[in-house]
Length: 110
Image (cartoon, rainbow, N blue to C red; front, side, top):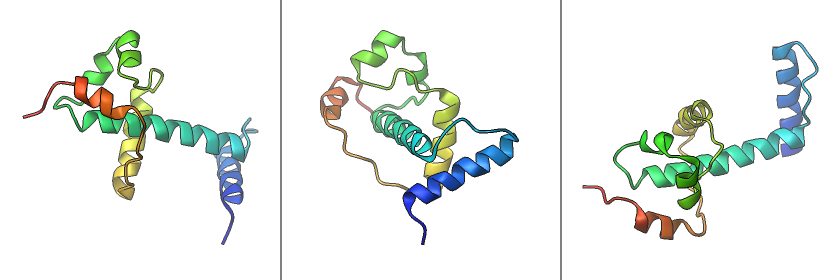
């Protein structure tokens, strides 16, 4: 069995092969980026559970995203790719402190 660090180093090597260049990242940097994207994905997924319109977030202005403590920089293309991947994994949602307050301010679903 390989360690997590070795697994991320292997991912970097595969990305280097795929791009046919020196991929300018380390395994640690890739793991940190994945964790950041995954955290933002989970926040947005939690938000979507309380709304009937999943595209609503993408119409928000930057200030609206900040007000609801939602990820301001998450790209829709990345979100959809992670959603497809996570849908296959069925990973449990992470508890995110402060999300209860946000949920109370959203429109109710029927």
